[in-house]
Length: 325
Image: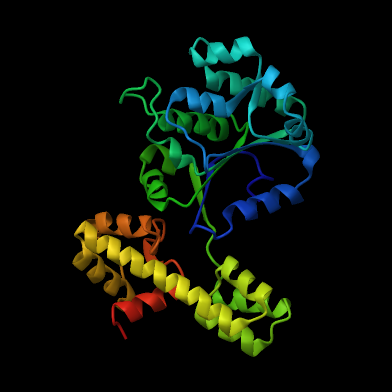
């Protein structure tokens, strides 16, 4: 729906790691008519980005490098780009800031629109740019300038859709509370499947109703866990292995927290999450919550202000290790 309507807002797609954000969007891209869209997809995962030049190298590719990479040509012909193509001379001028990078990108996007293509810019894990500054100092954060550009493309010019995917929900919270962005943005949670949906999926894959209910009771609707159980064909053994892995990870993390000197606070907070069904995040909770989310024990939804364990197996491990009924 978002992509088929006129560009009017930045769309933030957020959710737990491995909840399927990228897979979902790739499926959307696959199903929409390719002749109507041109996609610029920037995947920041695994990229070392520490300077303005690194970002320019990510956004732009010079024509000589482009000719040397045959597989990129195939992607372009399929309507999927991972860069803006420029001449060698123009890229040098962009790096030297003699040409405004955003103005150049805007001209390219307008050309696509004139040719009857709707531009879509997609960022995966954009928060990796939050510590990069335009001048190398501390005065002009690149990400702030980027968002100003995104607002112009969507809200002002209605020229291009902009989708930002992230598993960093504190980054989402920062955006959500920024008065300059909240009225120009939409937020879409891609969470694990709810129990009923997970159960129906398992049944549709040939699992009996009884076994489907058993699987959901223990692992919930985490897609990759469901997939592992389906592929193994050994339900109980696989659930036990998954629990052993989750418990081991949880225990290792608790040991690390103990060494860092905040074990008691972490345990108290985790017990509150387990026992308080009406749990609300307080201002004084943010520091410890950020660290527990960083260790991937918990997931925090800043829009709904809800906290939960990364999976049912993590919660089961927490109840056992922290001796909570």
